[in-house]
Structure formats: structure tokens, C-alpha cells
Length: 268
Image 1 (cartoon, rainbow, N blue to C red):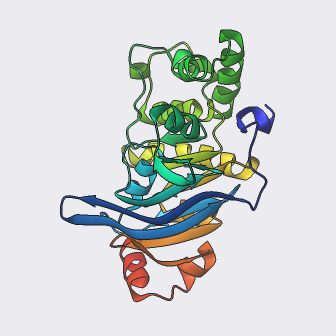
Image 2: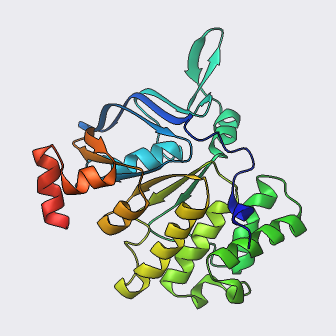
């Protein structure tokens, strides 16, 4: 299968800024999860967020999927604000139509597989391209078959999710996210719900995607060897802030921040 089966048609040129968080704050009650966070991700880059539980990593992904909205600050994806829009020279909260349009550029693979249990594998992958993107059924199925080939599940397209192992279900979830041709793929601890013997197969699929495509990836993981393999940059989070960032060889072998050294000492 050609590598461009799952590439976004209008991917931003490599090196251009694709994601920008500008002083983003998110609170849950009195607890501040993200504290005036600034960071950017360039198109085509693979960025991994590491840090202790509760440091704000998954909140970033949920904000990008608009499952949450920031209390302060703005998020841009490409040239468009995500939860705001410009009118009359000022920013106002965006309407649902604007949010849906920007969000179409983002795909996410969750910890839990979230497949539709009443739909067979092929339809799980074609449902959103048909109903959200307006693809014809034949085109959507052709795209889905190519992606099932990519993730090694062509023989299982006529099965229901309950007939698959956890690792196979997660690979279907990856194919489903890619079927929307997103510019950005978000990965939220995608192996944490899997039995240990199933983890390697899912990570191998993601390594292949990272190696053979230009898709931008933003990944939250505790699989440090995977983060070292696929990342262009690693961001270390603590208490809702980025305390250190850099290429994986620097972060994993010679971190500057004491908190980073403590965290890596506990997980490596």
C-alpha cells in the first residue's frame, strides 16, 4: 500500500506552525491544571508530552478535541482559532459550526478504544468520513481498506469489535482516526488499557505511521522507549507548565531540570 493512503490532502508545509497555545489556562474548581501555558507544534513534527499524572498532559489533548474549553487564552490550529473566531477585529467565542470545521483537522486515539460495538470494523472506519466529510460509500470503503492494510487487519474487516483482541481494537481505532485525513493525530496513552503482550504491536503501527508519513503527532505516553524512537521534541510537564523541552536524546540522556531527572529516574 502506498504511504499516502492516510496522509491529509492539505497538510501544512513542514516547519510551519500548526498548533499554538497562547497563555491557555484550564481550571477544575480551585485546581489549576494548565497555568498560562504557551507552546507551539510545527507541521510534520512528532511531539511527546511526558510528566507525572495530573500535570496537564491529557488536558491539552482534550482541549484540542474541544472536549474541554480553556478558561483563559486561545488555541490556534493552522490559521484558525479553535474555540474563538474573529469578528469586527476582536475575538469572540466560536459557534459550533466554526468549531466543527477546525476540529475536522484533528484526529484522536483514546486510551479506551471507543469503537461502535454494533458496527463491524469496516463501518467503524467509514462512518465518520461518510457522514462528516461527505465521502461516497465506495470511496470511504476504499480508504478504510487501505488503512486496515496499514494496521495489519485486512482479514478482520467483517468482524465486530468484541471479536477482536484489545490490541486489534486499538489498531482499528488508529485506522478510524486516520480515515478522516487529519493534519494532527493526538495519541492519549494508547497502550495503557492493553495487556503487556499486545503493546508492542500497537506501538509498531504508530512507529510506521511516524516514519512513513508527514502527519503531525502529539503524544501522551509513559512508554519512554517509544517516545525516544518517534519524537522530534519531548516536553516535560509539571504542575501545568512546560519545565523543560528538547530533542529526545537531550531530555532522556542529559536533562537539565531536577524534576525531569526525578521523573525519568522513576519511570526508566
